[in-house]
Length: 283
Image (cartoon, rainbow, N blue to C red):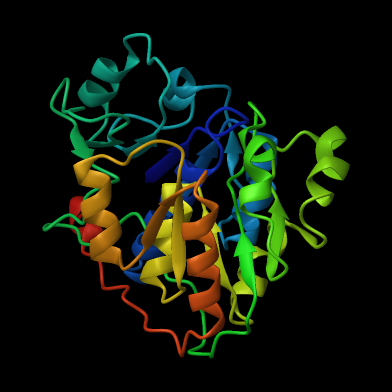
């Protein structure tokens, strides 16, 4: 059996779940069976919206071997401290694949490490789902999906830079509910995160400060602006360019306004998703 573990929550959002969903999708297309392991109940519902089967709940990365058995394969997308368990996983499991969590994060005990900021020459665009989006013309609206959470209220601090008449916002899964009225002061229309893919079907452009969300949308043909909270690294700039996404500081209202004006005039989508060979890791 192949087990895919994603660590999610208010601090880290749902990006790991999105990557795990992409891997699950690619394995399923090749007829490989996999199970999902999740530490957070909210991710369970979101995962099912993404087409994942019901997940097996575990407390943390340290509990993976309470489910997976000797000879199984595991994929781990988590920033958690493994408390020394990773070495045991590599010893016990037939294959351990880990998603890198920082620049220069390489193998520690012989496990395979995948970089989420690289379009891997061996495994293709393994970290992105293929969204079922039609080639529709722009609808003149822009969807702001800042991310899954706003724990430091950075979005609220900069909301005035993003508040344009044509912008509609998504209320992130881990946003503090008590601040919903504050967001509505800037964005007249607020959507639930579960509506995201339905809205993309209608021809919205997208702005996001989540690199995972931005890249995935761009590769699926959505005109996308990545909102930088700080200057992007060379690697991030390279992958944004490769995927066809734009970037601008979240504090640069002029650049954001230019993207929005151009999005209103945008034509049909051009999907850039390519096939992935990640299933070769497990056969």
